[in-house]
Image (cartoon, rainbow, N blue to C red; front, side, top):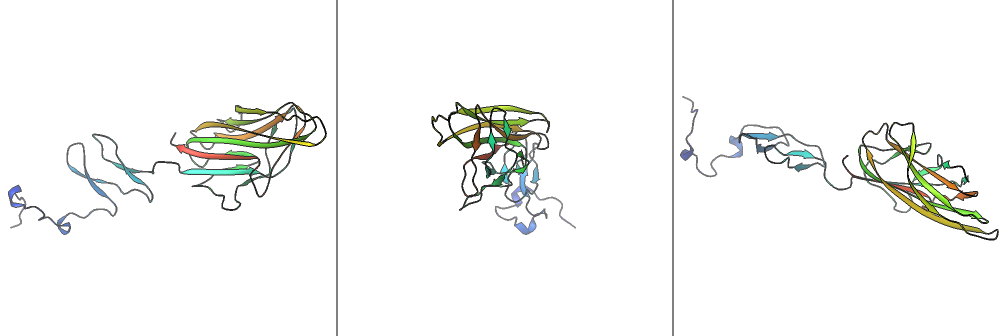
Length: 221
């Protein structure tokens, strides 16, 4: 006759071996549910960590905390710009010289429009270098964003000036930064613009960062 019940005193410490436990799924963990009964925690994906869901709920596997994406692109051309704002829509490349690198799946870019690889809260910064032969009062850069993949709005600006009384070239640089809540990667995108009261030239480079953009994913949206 099969034994269907064992009273607690009959089970001594360490008497139940792994071989006596019911089979489970590779990678699952054992926890307790809200009723106090044993339950399995579903196997996560590679690189995920076990995360508490608080009292009354089993833990789950989730993406590890911390920064999971960092990417940097630089401008390589030399476009002239003036009182009409110019979108920096060409001559972009990922920064890749002498150990420059990034983290995770980076940004994608087409005609100066940058698309985010996943939803989340991102830090976006734009640093530009410009020069002018002659006198100029000011130049400025902008970060523009769209929430519908169509209409772009300036969300941050940075001003500086070029002051030179003769014909030799004078250089300037400025940086602007914003935090962006990317709730939809198909619609939320960014681009960069520059403007000057007099004609100036945006400075790029193919082996060093002069005008460049940096993208860092800080966490979930």
